[in-house]
Image (tube, rainbow, N blue to C red; front, side, top):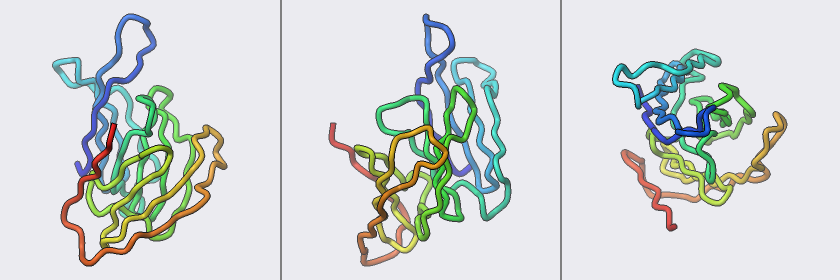
Length: 157
């Protein structure tokens, strides 16, 4: 498992939220786990397009929501996944945008920051939309002086 991320997910009932953990790996397998249960039962599994080129490099929660996650694939694809609905809402290709580490991606104010394997930081703007044709309007790359072995993106609240 290359990615592990958790957050409280709104449930179908009004009384409590499900505590979920999302895991993803280099084959493109994405699982949503119910971590409130002691057995760690899998709530949903989405396979997507499996294969090493479509392996998931990074996973991050979409800013301002607990129900959507952004996935960055090894082939430079960025997808928006709706967790409660178990749907891929959009999928766009951004050349050269592949995270170096599982936590090398963060959403800040509708901008996606991705720390790449070559050390560059990609800043991509996109529209928050459930429309399948939602496209990022611009990608900027900030240069770096070396390769990336670890990353941390600090958000100011």
